Amino acid sequence: MNTPAEIAKNYVGIGKGKVNTPPLKLFILGIMAGIFIGIGGIAYEMATATIGGALGKLVGACMFPAGLALVLIAGSELFTGNCLLVIPLLEGEVKFSGVLKNWVFVYLGNFAGSSLLAFLVAFGHSPSLLDKGLLDVVMSVAAGKVALSFGDAVFRGIVCNMMVCLAVWMSFAGKTVASKIAGLYFPIMIFVMAGFEHSIANMYYLMVGIFSNSIYGVGNTAVNLGAALTKNLLPVTLGNLIGGAAIGIVYWYLYLKGTKKD
Image (tube, rainbow, N blue to C red; front, side, top):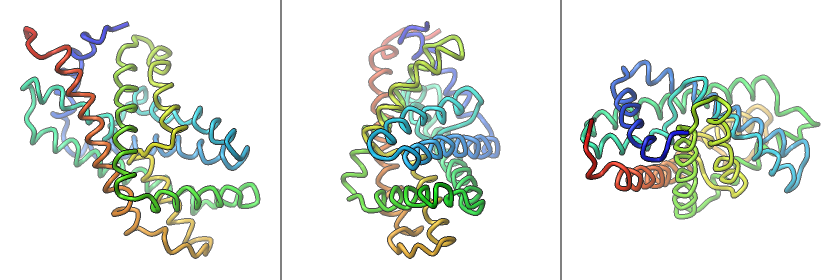
């Protein structure tokens, strides 16, 4: 495996590549990641609807890491993982304008990909499965997310992206596909089990809820685009930025600050 010091050193080069990627490619790669994380969301909601109760949520949490595995193995750009770009930024290898460009285009791509997948799922009438049991779960998840207080959403977002960035970090320790998946698996499973808030996963959960609300005439007025953006995505994204950047800052300080550059 790569040691933590080697991961930190390697990520400087990885981060420079991310920052130097053209905006259009970043956006398209972001779309792919939005779809991949949404696939993890589908698995979580299907398990919850099929099995039900705490066991259903546990099984769903065990399946959700497939989303990040797709992101890291198949190739795409995920906003939450890219919060680690503070590492090459602190090393002076990239400019903040480049990091900001990456975050903006990747975030917009993630939203587009998540929304596209949600549209296909909802308008393909997949929520009708299990005698509309899946619809109940879809609406329950979306309603729960817009019902969070701003503070709760921020704090849950902080812890979530600490775990996501640790999962990404651990995946970089591996030198094979199997070891990379093994590294990312448990932090992602745990954050889903604990109910922490991931902005990109929430894009799928909220958009499929909004589309289903309209298609099936559920009549849940709380689940709407305005609430999704202001009551969940805004505070959760803020929390994700704080949590992810904190992990990057700590590992930069521990393994790169004061060391000799190649």
